Length: 467
Image 1 (cartoon, rainbow, N blue to C red):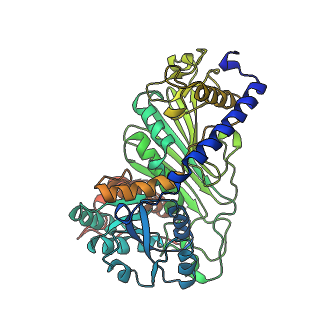
Image 2: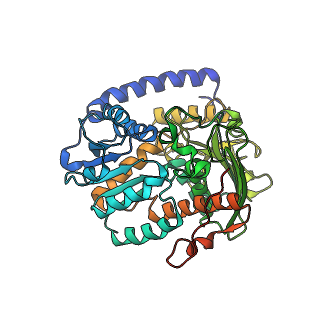
Image 3: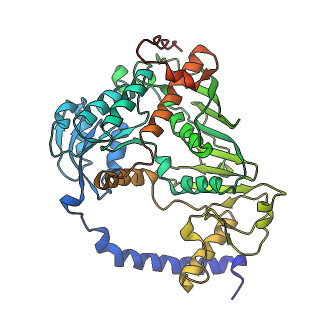
């Protein structure tokens, strides 16, 4: 048989056919298990508060999460609430006042997807009512709320509090963090991140209520809605929070009555000199990563031993990561070996020149000559050939949004601790608050300023300037 590192196209096509048949057989054999419904005592009964666009998006995913059961939903917009109710397999009770939902004894947990300015009030009331809480980012809106929620959540430490930062639940991001921990990327010094859209948010009929993201009294703008995800990635990869932030934000294109910026550029300096360079614009969606096969958002993580391009993806394009070892290093020379090799972090290197991108493979994709069966080895070798040729890229088998939701319910049932917990959420919210302050005041803002902002006797936080 031909060397599996040099598979011909014909062999790959033949293997692909075998893989399709095997996959189809597997699905048929597994159908009864897939259709199994967990018993009521195995499910977390939850209420959902905030059924706008993000809420409906999450409810679509929650339909496939077996360990949770929606029993109630709430929104002040009755039409949005009715649309959301159609997404729930069970017929949920509907409320306009979220406090009525919180009063139900059959609700063990709540998921919160209201506009940002209401995150803290609803979360506070939910904790006080004894509920477990999943709240979308940003967790809080003002400096005062950073301190108040920390104190409140610590008083209710037996309740699960998770923030919606789904990259923490991605296998690829977890793998890259392991690579950093094991030294595979050397000293990680820089992260570049972007979330570029075209046209971005547009003004819709319905006034401020329908367009809350475009107004500072309700929203943290691009920093809160987009940058928060990627600042969290940098914090995680660097293993620290920023020391200070500088940047510029302007309203240059969308003169439609909004008062948030339509483009921002930020630089975060971390304690060891690492830096995050961030950009969000609304006039172009090009992403210069992954050979420009993806758009809008992604991160480039750079170290002395190599770099990784990574994105969490969307419902249509799954999460993926590509590794670029640096030339003239021991790690780069290792890629010249003629067979796949497991690194200490569990990533698999495919034979390639040091300048070529190598797919970061999840542990189950590595070829195990000792334990893999013949068909499984052939399937893996075929995929490796396709990855090497750039025909396909490895993709995460499950959307991290599904993983984070299922994990929340598991933690509620078992008393587990979320990966995106209170302190992760408050660090992220702090970055949003101080980043907007640096752009408004056009100055370097130190992160330790939050220690005095919003506390009793401290000067009031400056009012945000109009864009």
